[in-house]
Length: 435
Ligand code: URA
Image 1 (spheres, rainbow, N blue to C red):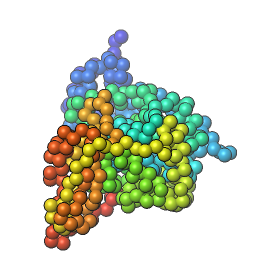
Image 2 (image 1 turned 60 degrees about the vertical axis):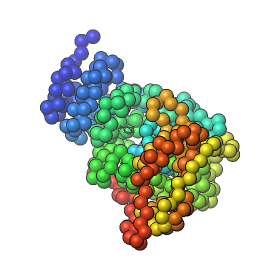
Image 3 (image 1 turned 30 degrees about the horizontal axis):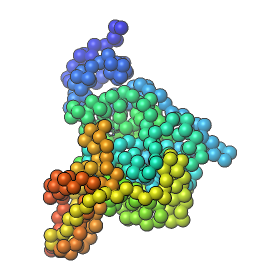
Image 4 (image 1 turned 180 degrees about the vertical axis):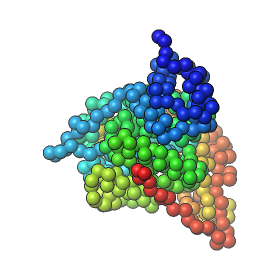
């Protein structure tokens, strides 16, 4: 088949800092998805985009082309008592100890808003929601689109794997970016995330854009630019989109792993749990409820058990047993405070890498994860610690992993002995809506 464009012309244009035309973008995304553009050609184009960027029109067109590569879901048939139910979704750019989806989805559903939460598995130091939930005996991540729509109507919240039909261009391109050093480009991240969310067909979306050592975006200005780009893409596509910029310089909560993060999420659903996890869950729920026209305080349903009831239904409806004991790691190793003082810093990236090396994460897509592995934190920045007190407990089934995990933790924390603990960093750093 003769092609409309020569891919080398498209690569040269971006290499020479020229804008790509809408036709060029439609063609190159489609041709790559069908295999008419080779991986080495697309990786060259991705690197040119990484280096030279894209303007807003190019990003919007690239996003639309990725959406057009696959199917679009339609939630318009989800009917509640007498009316169509609003759908709301959350996307996090990924962090360490980020288990927020687990309490958030049932919490928002407790107010009558349906939450279709298409989630992923972890790769590298950031965990994946599906890996966490798979530590619950019997729980299944996969389901058909029909089953998902039916559960959204009956249970209200579904957390499942995205089917192969949604934005296949992104699946192929994301795998390529992962091995060609082209992940951290705002146009490519924004179009990748938003193509999947727009194709999913949610009415509203809140983005949790992480900033700090444990996040993709290490500085606030870049995170803000990514957040605004995504909010505008969503808005232009008719999805009510807002974003919170949140701190990821230290892990969220007191657990980093799989089963131990489920355990902490259940604590939050029972009205307890660490303050930062509760604060972020409630703030994101507030955004989702407000975009869905619900004017209620989401903190209430954590306290009175309504969110827990939806969580238990949600787990059962996907084959899981919410009462089953969670897997526990066979071996543990405690790291103690070398001196007394105030914990000034506990680095998210170092703890994420340690948890990954203990077996909670994977290096290759096909690797299995250990359900019980991870890191339990006993102190957070701002806490007073005494010499010899446990700072963290490392958990794994395979004790030969302790050494590498400890290496990653070597410079991960600082204890101030002179009462100069420094100002505590806020968890929520900003909010963005459409410009
Ligand atoms: N998550 C995605 O889905 N895509 C990216 O490019 C980065 C994070």
